[in-house]
Length: 354
Image (tube, rainbow, N blue to C red):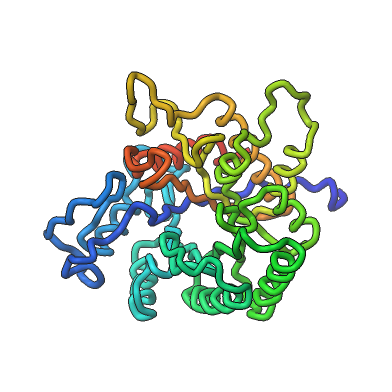
């Protein structure tokens, strides 16, 4: 049998729980070290955020998610839905020592780690330095990447660059330097760059041009951002013949260059809409955040293309983080934990095998 005709087995789906919306009460005396606590978490400052009295309590919550509702062939590392967590360096702790302690706790709970790093902002909420020079973005990227790799994650996801830069004079040279910095570190840990608003990769058609120009650029695909940026459902097939158009070329190309997926459905007006009947709250008899058939089909088709690309490339594993969060797009009124858990179970049902 020729190499070209070899059919690889379907990649194993591994699900990760983002710590967005899950946090340890910073005022708890057991916030960093105590394996158990009876102290009560403080009330969340906004709906959708869940507080825990200790890191151990948070990790027990993640390992137990869905444990009594999934079949034995759909379980994560400890019998729940998730194989691990996705977290920024700030999520892991405020010092290097705290971060190493958190990694040890994850190992005790049998959880893998995906780390998110940022070329600007300390974390997602800290945006004050977004417009700094590309050279300073590079310096922060290198510093955070070096620290992240030392913690031994299974993958690194990067928020990279600034959307205000010029394509030819800033963005292209910047990504060339980023990829050279990755190569220079010589790590076998995979590194991908997220298609997030506020970043150059928040523009889908610029992303396509960068992919053509930079063969080693790999992506974390969160295409929910692109639906809002473009104010349309990219890849929708209403009124057009299947297989035609730039949007399909875009999504198929991106699927083939995706290392990691943030699984969240969006539409032209919101980066997160929930599955019908899953965790949203109705307003005036109608929930405007509920997905329609078009969103469901577009996102399922794209994720299927990602899975197929990994199978064709002989990748044994593909990693996905359901990433609904609190605080915007109706997120503060969602039961975020339930929505992510529902999405995780849906992904296992749809993509557990091919």
